View 1: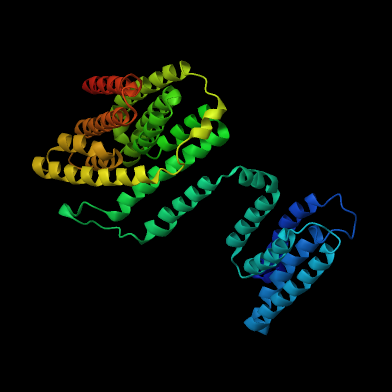
View 2 (view 1 turned 30 degrees about the vertical axis):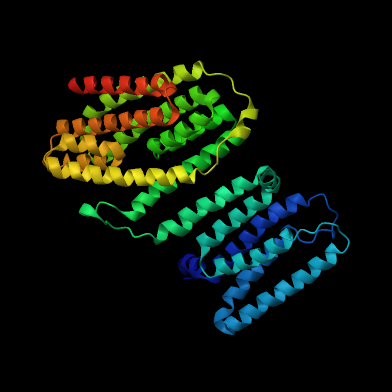
Length: 425
């Protein structure tokens, strides 16, 4: 009888919760004990056993709540915090170390033990792992902090302001003519452009010019190659010695757009893959080969040039691009009204000016109903060509005539090859 009921009893009992509270304490204690492993017994303020017992104590206090009430649980924590603080202060009298990290981590361990016993297991475990990582990588984090400059910190706070504070409060609905202006979506593009600028700045600062450009281009190309083109073109205008590297970065980002388009389209309608992969692969290869040639002939850049990097956030350029996007959205809707719902090719051409993903999703869904696969694929390719042409014109207009050969000609070549391969489908 007992054997048959034991598994459910153990699983639903407080034993499991207390075991998790203990494990959380031991996890944090392993990291703390490792750093203090060379200290003599009795000279460590808190080690593996102390942290394990602290997590267990927090779990026990939470389990007692139904019997003693919330006020008693709060008093228990205050008593524990007071006792630990007094012991900590007493131990610090003979040490010049003013850090309170161990004290804070000990109190946090108690609270995470309580959280686990309150059946918030995933949250408590995640917080414990993050705590252990923050404690473990002290030197790395402090090294980053020492390299952080005032204008970089200011840029980071501004990015948090426009993304975490402002973006969520903007209305996610259409306004203006044809209800086409969505404040949330427009500001999201501003945040995206500013974020790419921010990530690219630090990628080049810590990884070096060459590696930073490639990493930024690959990652940003999966999100918005248009935003990356804007940022790198602006950077190339100021950093003329980096124009070949930055041009190659633009082409890499543009090239990564094509597999993303194929993936999104085939996730909606797998039948599109047999027709879509060929023109997309041709355009991608032309662009990436051009990027490789530019990269091979680049000038070797010294790290000192990184001190002349632009503002890491580029918020003004991002806001200007948001205004430009509003104009393009209005123009696109006007063209849609002019040509009607049946003008799929015209719609793809105009929609591709702003972004490929919306028209890609639209045509992929339409191909499931009354639109043929050939028409849908043609529209997607036209939108990708239109978007590539816009990025080429953007690069030339911002960075100057050097982009005529570095970016415009490769993209025009890719567009031509893509349209020719479309005729073969």
